[in-house]
Length: 102
Image (tube, rainbow, N blue to C red):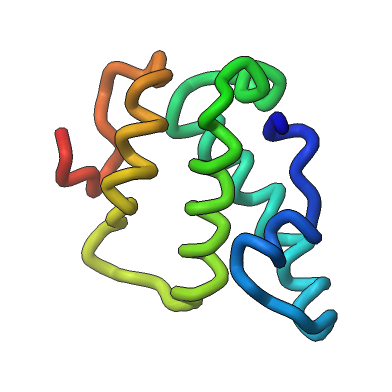
């Protein structure tokens, strides 16, 4: 599966959500997670499809967006596994603001 093939149903399965109540929210979160991964790595959305583990990173970012629906004022933190996957393919050499792994 590639990033472009990810659907709301894939995200629901990953999150173990078995109702349709949050479908509208998940339909907003999924493209936002894809854009986050593209921006973090400096890759295009299309380039994300070139990496077999990138769907996992997108799903993990989407899960964080779904489960933690609050803004943190002192910067952002990213799941270490997600950061490792995204960092592997990153063409951005400067760390993101608030990135404590740099």
